[in-house]
Image (tube, rainbow over all chains, first blue to last red; front, side, top):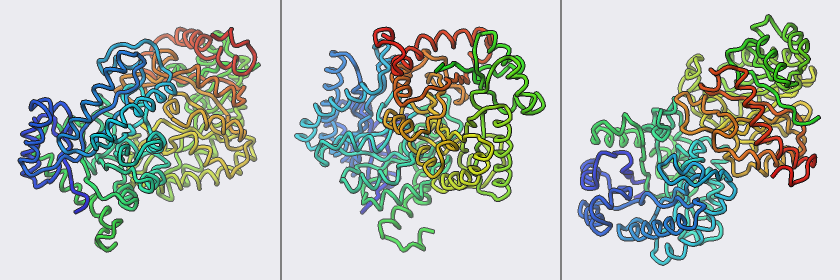
Length: 302
Length: 302
């Protein structure tokens, strides 16, 4: 099997882990991508593993590690410890892939409710700190068999969430490390605009680092809470046919995770959200993955 | 003289051309960057030229041409004619530089109040159409001595305003044409996030295409109208010291235009906006331009 659909629990934020697993299983999904707060919500990773496997599901990824840009020594120690905990959780729930959102500028730390860290807006230095911290985490991730999956975020989040902004930059960051320990994710919302996208997806495949494919649409207008501009596939402006073909042609055959932060989608019945995401996936994404992977003749996808 | 401060009239949207020119002159500025609707507001480019030169000012740029992504034949004809008119206006007011915002996806044309153009979300094809239309405009611009200045817009505007998203992509697009006819602009808001920024500014200078430096800050949260997230320098998260040094080191010595779309800034008294932008420019930007240009010793800028 290839291209199994997976429910990222960010898509159904009102469900706890029990409920999300049940909803995914009832919809016939084989995979789920939990966020860490759902793991702690059931008392830890061992309990979470039992809930997931007990329903016959597997974890596609764990969301998320990262936030490695702090310019304080204490903040750095804390961030590394939190990431080591995330690596342990990923290993325990059987997720090979830990999604990494690297963090924004120290000057914007307060935007996400963190401590103020002064006026530091030096993005080059922040990126250097991410590279160094990644080097500190790699041996531990390798030891536990977990892959750190670098996520380039849309540049609208560069100040507060991730100074990692393109797939090419993620691949550059990964270069010093084994492909089994550092990978990259293609998240359509974050990268669809990139003029180098096709080339960098090809490169990611060639370099053996294409670790996850996450999908959702890019809606307009940008939501009042910019994070919630992610839309159901087909509701926005992303060309899923092209990107899905590029991903499959680059050799990706793993899960496809749907991660939608969107006020309307998140607050409707989870069963409706999941059935809609299945339909849209089968209509707008899967045929193009299959065609490019050679599973179907070209005519079947058009 | 180098690095003359210029008032882009987008910063004072409540002023007509007479008022904007007067406000700039009273503040001691030598340059103004008008938008086209202010030109038509005074009856055309010849009248505008008299108003600008009559106050002892010069036009730094004309904003804006572009919107070349349409997928309809009629739309294309109309867009090219509008751009030829913009080229004539730029030549008449003595602006050597016509800023080009290339347009978004046909599927999003309705977002800016245009005609619906179907479901076309093919960004690769839209970029190809921009390249072809640019080729159609270059001979006319060359004839009139106007430089088409390609503006990479922040990727948050890729769907509705500009499929041109990075400075590198702008330089690639410019490559086939003479440097005197096609240039690029560095607008801090649009490009500050780019991991390739330093390298591409250097390249732009090396290739002789660095045609304009526009500044404003990147504010958070992103404004309800995303276009209005541009902030007064110092109010957001941009490292003006680094970018300004890169721009000056790349050989740029032209005007520095302040272009701020921001509800609060735009609605306060224009005199306050202009005096604040002068102060912030002299505090946060100019010392670093001067230092990198060798005008001042390093110690004077720190």
